Image 1 (spheres, rainbow over the protein chains, first blue to last red):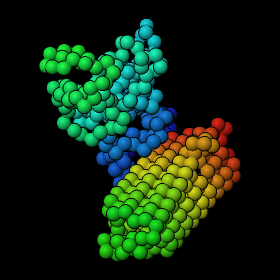
Image 2 (cartoon, rainbow over the protein chains, first blue to last red):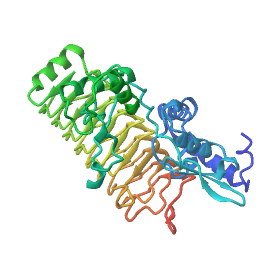
Image 3 (cartoon, rainbow over the protein chains, first blue to last red):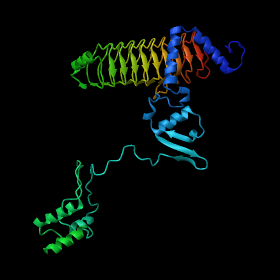
Image 4 (spheres, chains in turn purple, blue):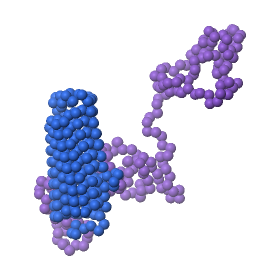
Length: 205
Length: 219
């Protein structure tokens, strides 16, 4: 041992190593084996970052990299590698900011999209009934519903299960069939005949 | 399978038939002095259940969750515990001697007078857990954290770390009044701001440790 041959070495690291050796020599063999096994498993096989290098993060080390968020991964990389480029990233929970010379600290995650995948179109339709914001809107001459027959409301109050979406042609057919039983509906032209239906369809469009 | 309230006997039957749990959930069951030694428990949840005085010796538990359980005086010797989380459990007088605890989390529990003697604790976090007079003598504790989120330091007064080996352990701000570290080996232990009044470090060896300002082992 080179360190032992120099008892008056002033190097602090060498002193620590010498103390460590001296202490480990006093431990019984089975305890040394336990120690070596735990050290190897923890720091070599599992690659756990020592607490002194884990900065303020004293949580348990992640079991696998695949479960990490981007912020956690950056945090781990920052702890593992003292890289000046990584040091520019500031991590606060899941929020990541970056320090750029001349621009200060800019948030990177401000407009981040939600983690949940978007719902596929046509699977679930969730609509809400919109009440007129003012009583005048219901009777306004610009309210198109006043000029339409009493067709089923285009909005639904509760989420519906998956259904095949009806085509615009089917909607038009439903809209034109209903008024037959209600000839005196408000705003309904009283003329009968195919021309009138045609104009009504145009108006609906 | 889910077991609730009155299905304690079914839980016992399950343990008897399968030798443990796998993907099960036990809720609100009263199972004091349950004998489940030598079993293998995997990916199961035990919550709000009374298991005081039970015997889990020589069990192997992985990816388990114990929440709001009464585990006072449970005999858990020579077990292998991995990725187990315990929340708000009563662990007072628990006997965890010679067991291995790895990648586990013990949060907001009471483990006063608990015995961890001769055990191996690695990559484990004790948070907001009362460990007064707990015994860690002869234990190997590695890369573990003793923390208390509310009060700033872990409650470890009069804990016994005699002849223990603590490597890369955070005891920052811990209350270690009257604790014993007789003959302990401390390597890379962070005791910054810890309260060490009356702590006994006779025969202890500290290498690369951080102590409170003004504290020295010789003094």
